[in-house]
Image 1 (cartoon, rainbow, N blue to C red):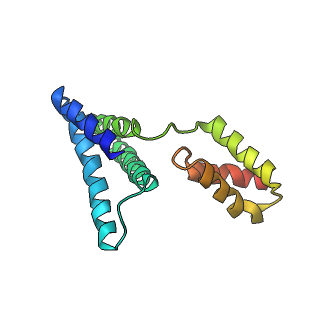
Image 2: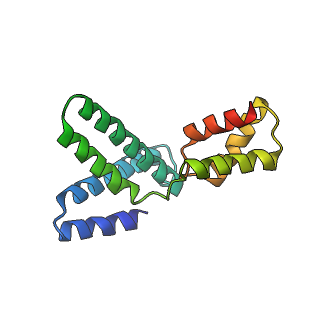
Image 3: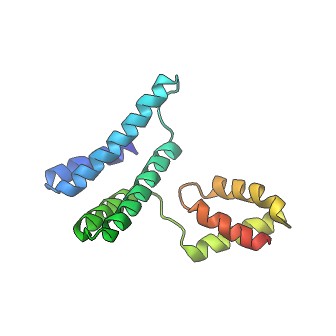
Length: 149
C-alpha cells in the first residue's frame, strides 16, 4: 500500500497536481505517524487493515468538514474537502452500496440461522471478517438489527 501511495505521489509531483500531491503527503504522514507510535509499543509496522482504517477515518473527517464548511457558507472549502476524500477513496477497496450491504447482511443472518437480537454480535463479527474495508459497519448494524427484530 505504501509503495502504491509513493508511486502515486511521484506521479502527482511530476504532473504538478498540487492538490493530489498534498493529499497523498497527508495520507503518508498519517500512516507514518501511526507506524511510529506502534513501533514505540514494540510492534513491527502496520497491517493492511490498519492502513485501511486510517484512510477510512481520513475520508470520514473530510466528509464531516465538508458539511461544516457548507453550513458556514464556505462552498469552495467544502469542495476542496470532497476532492481530497475522492483522492483517498481511490486507495480503498470498493465500498458495497446499500443493496449489496443488505444482501450480505441477509446472507450472513440466513447462514448462521440467527433468530433474534442476541445473535447480533455473532452476525457482525462474521460481516467484519468477510467485508473488512468494504462495508460501512454502522449502516450494516442497523440493517442486521432490522433483520433480527
